[in-house]
Length: 115
Image 1 (tube, helix red, strand yellow):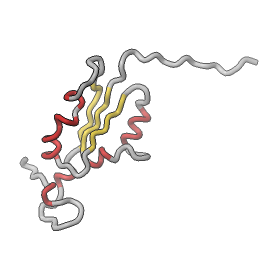
Image 2: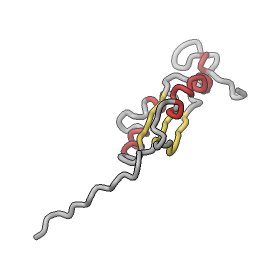
Image 3: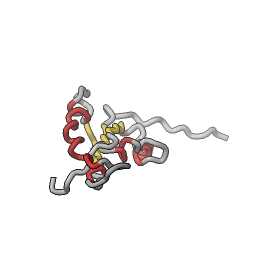
Image 4: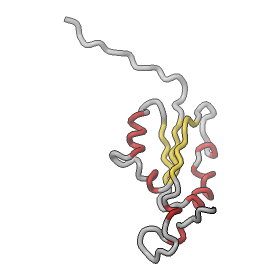
């Protein structure tokens, strides 16, 4: 009786590409157990590097102001690595009630639709 068949490990063909996830707290906390980024990481294990750039409480206006600091293309990165995909999840904090006096969603988080 022969032993179990052992498959050889696949050979990586160059650097692992990135998937960058940018957004507010929905992105920041996405790596928690059963979070969407945890599932993404599990699905792409050893095939993509997942970079989370979640900024809890940020609205689209604030995120735009710091985008150049959080996007890896602005940071040192080996030339051979590339970005395979970007997710952008913003707008939740933009929709905060501008007349809110307290509680979640400060009035200064609101961004008018026209903007």
